[in-house]
Length: 205
Image 1 (cartoon, helix red, strand yellow):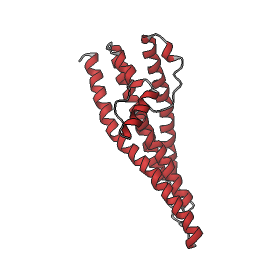
Image 2: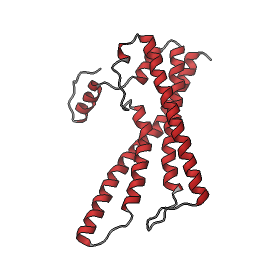
Image 3: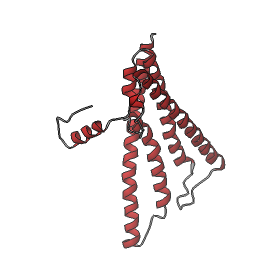
Image 4: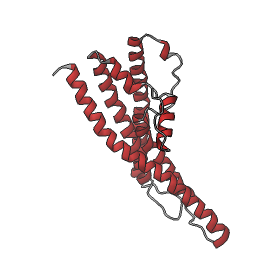
């Protein structure tokens, strides 16, 4: 199979993975909303009804941790992670392609370390049958496992993207690789905001 064909296969695998990461992103977002409602209810209940769940800190901590890691992969697919691109945009096109790939490789190494550390933490909690200190006594391996799953999916998506875009560059399709890896421009964000409120005809970039 040609290099271009392998790149197309990797692209299909990446799009397939993105379907799952999109769902994870929505779950993360709704988790933040539920977290806000739960905290608000608990504060009002203590003030006016005289009772509390007594587990607000633990539950919201788990929800926030899950929301952060489960949103990482989806944010990557949207190219919405913060990047400083002042210098790279001034580099020659071919060099820019490889710099984008180097950046993705560095992110893969970092995500790999995070995923490995999270697995070790879950393994330790299972070994000692650790539970939280709230009245719920939730086994720590459960929220930690969900948290670690988000990091593992994030690392997996980065690896898939790394191979896809490496194959694209080697196949002479560097422009496609750059389109996959270049940070979003502010005009793209403006276009989406205008489209969300029903304004059409906005300039695109």
